[in-house]
Length: 253
Image 1 (cartoon, rainbow, N blue to C red):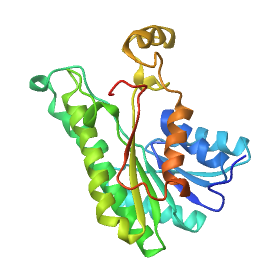
Image 2: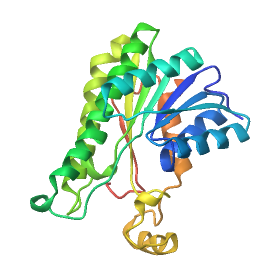
Image 3: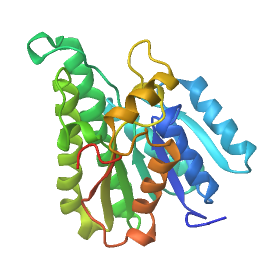
């Protein structure tokens, strides 16, 4: 078993399910102490239980990433629990879509901005403040292939929010690389989570659909996306700065 992240503390937001949970489990399996964060306590407790079942170390911390005070408290609590913060994965995000821009509800637009964009900005600000004062660190933001790399009708608000995540990542990477903070993004396509299911669709139905839609012919396993995150956070990627690694089976090629 690899121990690339032994004696490292990792913070993962949106870790109560899906990609966030897979990422947290993957870091714990490689020796990290993992702070799993989100708005709902019960799913986070499930993630912690899964990590501890495999002999890992984790703690659940509730926070709303769209609120600056809660994000600063999240970073502070992580440091108090585990003694530091070397890696942060800003995964918390929401999906809204299904209508053209002219019909996009203002409330949906605001939610996309608050969580997907402001949430990433506030998270990076709090994480960078700690890291640059304590010897550096690495940050990986979870964007999407839908936005900076691929477009679809009816998703304009979501596309804009995720394109903003990719742009924020590049800007922050250039601003803070000399502070010892290395920042990159991962842009997944459809993966094996409930978010990739169409309304009323089953996983079997999705598999059939993806054989026609995806050049690879399938969705990505959550572990495949997690592996990309761990690579970017690891010393193996020491020269990778401001990258946006697309994991979408060729959909945006």
